[in-house]
Image (cartoon, rainbow, N blue to C red):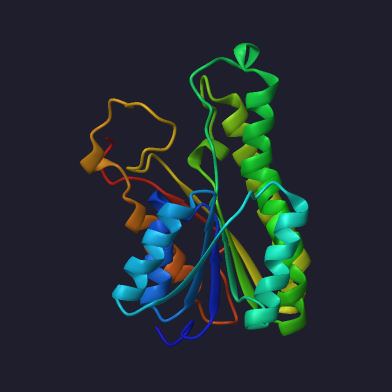
Length: 238
């Protein structure tokens, strides 16, 4: 708990599911969490829940894919807080259910932009602050689909393979500054991600809080080491 008390943690895709669970967990550990997503009403509600539980939360709704907006958001964080210690790139979309040749270019672009370009823009905006502080932790939420083929989900799988590669590479670029970059690759998580019913037993799926617990473990590692990747699977197949 003392490891991140008073630190600033930014979470993208924080309106619900994994992002909301991470926000609650880090706030409970003493961090000031900054929740971002496009759903302002849900962000407001979540921030109120965190503060009612004794935590500190801010929120800002914006389009993660707008470069100028991301830069303005980062400038605001710099002005209010002097930077951030934790950046969790969690925002993602699926657009699954069709073979690649039936996937519309617009759907391909939406998946790649949200799952990969969004993380790039956030790292580009906040890494310089971490470099100046010579401290920080970037955590990218990937998927086991970034390690395995995914039938009727080629675009999503490709975006997560790409996010893994981005994480491994930026970890090498930043480690000399005392900044750690990690990736978490969970299997099926009990959220509404992707829409519809998977036919799997929800109680056997990974829960959002399980992913949040991994984030908590990563950001409290001793400074001389870091966990570069976590593959998170359900104990029993759903």
